[in-house]
Image (cartoon, rainbow, N blue to C red; front, side, top):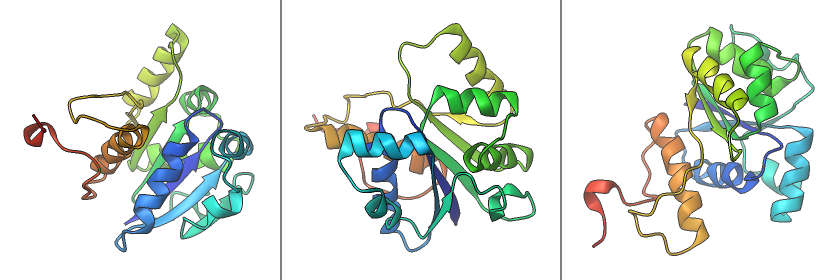
Length: 188
């Protein structure tokens, strides 16, 4: 399986990093990473991690300004894309068809080719504008997966909450994991 991972300039960069960490251990998944300029900035601000270290977690890395990269064309086969976190700016660009960088162009290709596109929208509260844009991309075939906190799995640390969201992303691609206890297996 080949997945494109986009990290944009919304709070929650650790979600994208954790997804990359988990997928780096999975020999069945090849990852292609694209980080926006603001995504890089948020990674540094929120996590203190060096961009070079995050890039090393992926199998391949692409510059977000490189619209000649293979994902700019629908003829290049890949299984899907996750934008995690997905800024509302990126959401609006995708919803309007404004594909001016590699992340939004790859999202557009995913939609037009019928490939899975998962958007981990990071904003709260949501305005009616955000909700309309989410509806538009959902109707076009994207999955809206906001990083909503849950507690039935009895999280003990922030990492448990992060793993829950990452596990929900993996579920979208039928990738096996043990990042959280499922409802039927909950701890009492």
